[in-house]
Image (cartoon, rainbow, N blue to C red; front, side, top):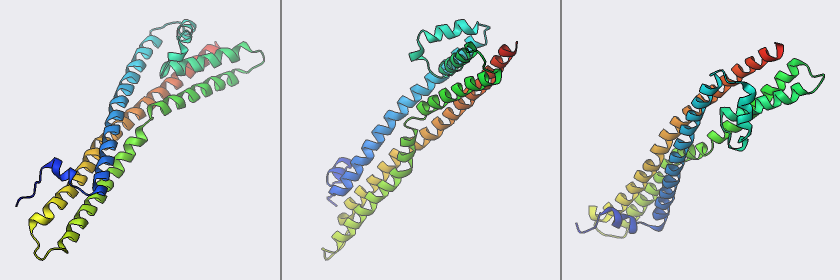
Length: 224
């Protein structure tokens, strides 16, 4: 058998459609790995920032001085800092106005924190849907390339009088490369999506717990 079955030759000699499928899967894989590394850094920073802020918050620091410190660089605030800043800012604004009941002040402050929480979760979930899409569709895209390559191999058999393995092996091999590339793109994306979705959910619960605890502090403060 004289057919060259090296990986590069199989890719270069594949049909145009199969090559397009391989290129699409390669681009999807590169983009998903980029998102994986970026999301890893983002979530790592978010966890570290949450730990630092909680350590400062529960150290007994004055809330006003903490707010003033965060307010000086509010555009850089993230995570719990932004939630705290939004809630305390609304609390101070409503409390400075005359004729507003304590319950309305607390409701307004908690509502501001919930809005900030939603924005933070949206940022943390950014690009997760792309990873989910790559993980769920890449195997099927690779399977399409596989089916097309095998179909071409069997069509080539109709033009010869004697069928041999050497005639069909290159087409089947190039088809299986498409399947392998689909799995190579999908598996890391699925693993990363599941891991990061769990990390986001844990941060969401952590932020939500902080809102409840901070709201309780503000409630005691306003009734003191």
